Amino acid sequence: SKWDAGVDIINELLDEDSDAYKTMSDEQKAELENVKVLLLERTDSKGDKRAHLPTQLLAKEGKADSSESGIDRETAAFIMEQFGGVTAEDSSRPTSIGSDDFQSFDVADPGCYLIPEFKQLSSLQQKKVCSLLSWKSINNWGFNIFDLVEFTGSRPLLFMGWAIMASPHAQRAMAEACGVNETPGEDGYNFVESELQIPIHTLCNYLRVINDDYQDNPYHNAIHAADVLQSLHTLIQMDSLVKPTTLETFSILLSAAVHDVDHPGLNNGFQSKAKTDLALIYNDQSVLENKHAAHAFLTMMSDSGALLSKRSRSTDHINYEYDSDLNILRNASAKQISAIRSKVINAILGTDMSSHFAMVNATKSLILGDGLTTLDDDGRWKLLVYMMHMADISGQAKPDNLFLLWTDRVTEEFFAQGDKEAELGLPISQLCDRNTTNVADSQIGFIQFVIKPAYVVLGDIIPEVKSSVIPIIDSNYDYFVKEKAKHRQETVLPLDKV
Figure 1 (cartoon, rainbow, N blue to C red):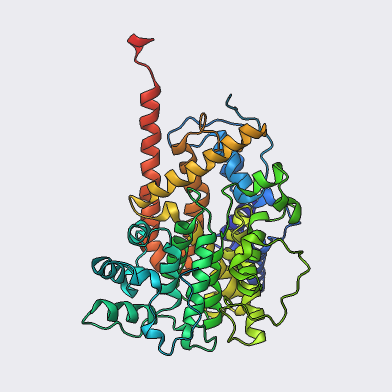
Figure 2 (cartoon, rainbow, N blue to C red; figure 1 turned 90 degrees about the horizontal axis):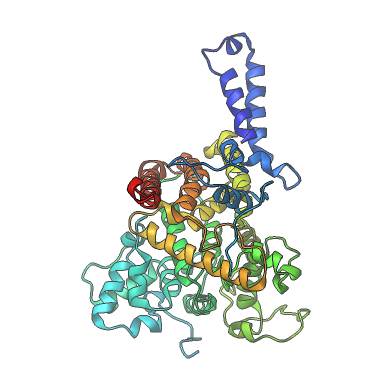
C-alpha cells in the first residue's frame, strides 16, 4: 500500500549502513520513527481508503492475470470491496443468464452443573464430548469443530461456550459425570467466581438462545460461531505479550460467541443493494454488524428475552431496571456492565470486513509505537479485537481438511446470494456467480492479500502464530495454486482435439 511504501522508504533511511543514517542526528532519527508510526496510524474513515490497499492488489484493477499464482480481476475487485471498503474503478464483470431446556435455579456448586443437552447424550458420547472439551483439547489450533457437531447436533455454540466461558467448572462437571479418574485442574477463566460473578446457569441459557438464533446458513451459522470462539480462545492461550484483564477477556469471548447471531446469509453489499429494512435502519453502515450487536443485547437485557424473534412492540420500549432471565451480567456493577457492553459492540463492529486493511495497518502502528510491553488499556483492547477478527477469518489458516470444509461452505453461501441477486434482477456480487467464479482463484487472492499479511502481523504479537500457523497458511496457498494449474490443464484441449 501507499503506507507500506512510505514505511519502506523510512526504513531505508534508518538503515544503519545507509549514508543518510550516518548524517542524521538522534533527534532526526527519532522524528522519522514517529513519522513511520503516523503513516500506519492514519486509519480514519475520512482518509483515502485506497491508500491502505496493497499496491499489488491495486495493480490488478481492470487487468487479468493468467499466471498460476495470480488472481483474476473479479477476485481483486471482491477483496478491495469486502476488505477495504473500496469499489473497483472497473467493476464490469461477466454475468450469468438465466424452552424446555431452560433452568432458572441457582447452582450452589457450579462445578456440578451439567447442561441438559450433555445429560441427554449416551454414556459413550458423554465421554467423547468430555475429552473433546477438555482444557487441553480446546487449546488446540487444529481443533475440529465438526467433531463436536457430530455429538452435539445443532448446538455446538452452547457446548463450546459452556466449555470455554464456564471453565474450569464445565470440565470438572463433565469429568465427574463420566467417572474420569484424573480430575481437571484449575485451568480456566473462572468467570463464575471472578469479580463479574457470571451465573453459570444463566450463561448457558443465554448461549442456548443465541445458538438457536443463528440461522441455518451454509457458513454463517452456529458452527462458525463456535469455531470462532474456540479459535480466539486458542490465540488468547498462546504465549503472548498481551495480558488482558478478566473483564476484557470475558468481553472479547462474549463478542466472539454472538458476533454473527441471526446472520441472514446475505452480506452487507446485498443489504444495501436490495434496500432491505436492515440497510434502511442502519443507514448502510456496518449493517449486519450493528444487527448482531443489537440482537445480542436485546436477548440479554430485554424483557422479551428468548422471544426476541417474535417481538412486535415499538422500539421505544424501556428495559431500564428490568432483570431478564437471560441477563448474564446481573451480578456485575453498573460500571462493569457499561464497559462490557461498549467493548462487545466495538468488537462486533470490528468484524466488518470492509475495514480489514485499515485494521491491519492500525495494528502495525500499535506494534511499532511504544511496543507491546507498554500498552495502555485502549491499545490492549485493540489487539484483542484484532485477534477476534483473525479468528473470524481463520478458515484458510486451519490445517487440512478443515480449510477445505470452510471453503466449500463459504462458497456455497456466496453462490446462494448470487442466485438471489439474479432472481431479483440485481447485479451479481463478485465471487457469487456459480457459473463464472473460479474457487481456486478466489482463495489464492484471499490468502495472498488478506490472510497471510494479517497473520504475519499477528505473528509479531503471538510468536506461536509465526512458527505454527503461518506454515499452514503457506501450505493451503500452495494447494490452491496447484488446483488452479490442474484446472487450466483440464480446460486446455489437446492439439488433435482442436
